[in-house]
Length: 423
Image (cartoon, rainbow, N blue to C red; front, side, top):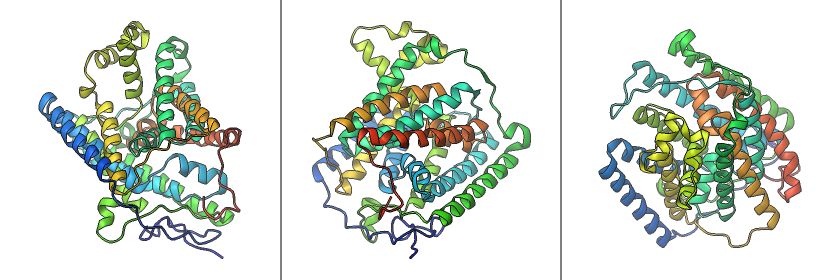
């Protein structure tokens, strides 16, 4: 028997392809968690007002965009970690096809913005190419191993923390620790062989860059459909959902809706800040500022003595683009989870799961800094701007995912199997 892989009713046939059985019907959402919703909403509004009034419209807008990203990530349960795990383990390419829509929509909007060179709040949107070499390859693979152990990617860690998932709080702690370890040991990671990046728009213009990106993404869609037809995997699991108009505010959104909304917000970050959406630099910054509170001096480390990094460390986090969007994601996800009745703290965590979460976070912290970005700052940002390093990051992350799946059982973590009812 075959069935659609649609994870929720209303998802587009773009995602559909034969699976081993029908996906279960989603349960109704739980009642609204009133107190967490009130606290998260008040915190979101109050903090946005404070940042906007104290530091200006640009930074207030970035925090507001982060809130939108958190809402969209939670309501659509948009996954990077799970998408790669499902593809490698059982051949279900639904998640990767959702990535293609996200990447293609973001590439279209960013090409339009970058070709004009006009941004908001006095910014000038500029696309840059990440360097290509050993740091990128090793960093992407290490990051992917870490996200399979930690249970979430960079953006997934933030929205899971906002939703009250206690295990992922440990992942975030490990993520910050790994980022600090990289900045402390920065001299050990410099001098690795690499070459300058390759930006398509510099060779074929923005239209050519966009056309090539879309063509490759369409090829990936066709390839994942062919793999899925051959392997006939289990369908993707479903999550509780509201019905009718309430679904807009309480979720869960069709994953394709989430992909489009995330792409629009990523392009808006580019328009407002002049740079692409990123996540992980903030973790190094937060860790360094915490060490300063303890009386230590990370500002003397080589990493923090470069001009740009020193400026970030010396300034408040409310003027750091990545910190603002990260904090916004946590708060936005808290609002969304409370509205959906899904906000809850889990007090009991198996010790092996806790170890995996911390270790996975450390690996992601080191890997992201080594590669110059994560699933957002390298993969999404790179591919959507036509930078070759984004594609290469994805290739090596798939390899790291395979290694991560081999390691997960050591920590009591399950992998999807072809005999499962869902993956």
